[in-house]
Image (cartoon, rainbow, N blue to C red; front, side, top):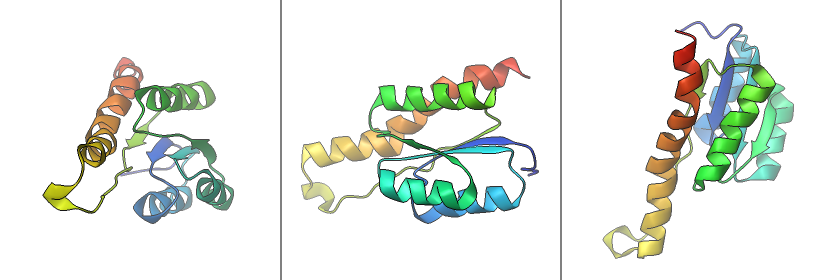
Length: 127
């Protein structure tokens, strides 16, 4: 995939795979990168490192996801690549509380749906 000149949004970008994607996309010539994570301090460090725009947010909240996509579209004009990377794992297995399972569901499933719902209309309009 040719990343050169692309506008990219990455969730879960303060560490791990998300941070690695931000670094690699910058190396590959991405035009603009907006990174999101709930850990604002770590996110800001990654943003400074790769020249990205940090957007601290909680992707377990639909309004935060919608605000992220709107901010990226306002800043970039368009989103070329959306990397729904945010995810969590909480301990406890089947014994975990309903509250923990709900949080896992919201971040690992719904956040991806909300981001796609928000970003796809703009992407489809350019086809």
